[in-house]
Image (cartoon, rainbow, N blue to C red; front, side, top):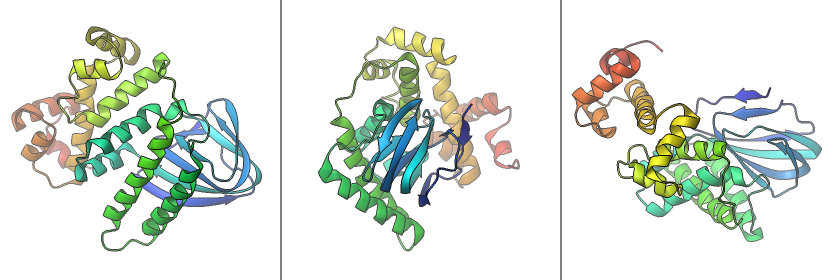
Length: 281
């Protein structure tokens, strides 16, 4: 059984210079971009082996299990991020093109097991952006967070361009499709239009009746329940990590009023939002 690594931060950047791979096969609770700055070896990903070389870039999702076998001393560049960084980015940018690029990366990342870079002229750009992001991350100054988000956005746009040019196979396994639908819900949970069953069904080329049955059967939870569960988890973070009022959080979560929000939260956590805000932990 593989190990699972966890990250408490939404964004992290660093490099590893290794002659030997020191870590067991593992998965993560985050997304991970791995840049092969130098060196070569083998990438074992989801029980498949792929040679890696300088200039390769791998995109790993929380569903992936992997390890590297170093054949020649390798410098790995890592950019780790959670879905929270997407929410932070989309709060600053309303550009629909950006949101579509995010969808492409999240929903189709697992379809490319090898290096995601398909254009030679883009390789230099993404490695330069990685260096800029790493420098800004390690040397924070005024406006660093905004600069990081802009650089990260540019990086993802280039990566998305390469992913879309891989001629991805659109037929998912049932497991992949469940993961894709649940990810879509998490990404768009605050968009009432995108949360319509008809919109979800259209996005995944399924009938409205079947998409509901499909998720209930394979995820053990209805779409409506998953939407509420996702909203409640977001509300937990807002209650603990922000100074927003209960009413403001209710509005942000698209509840009709604070009373409806409080009732839903109490059903989910067996305590009111106010009580939860002042609990320890």
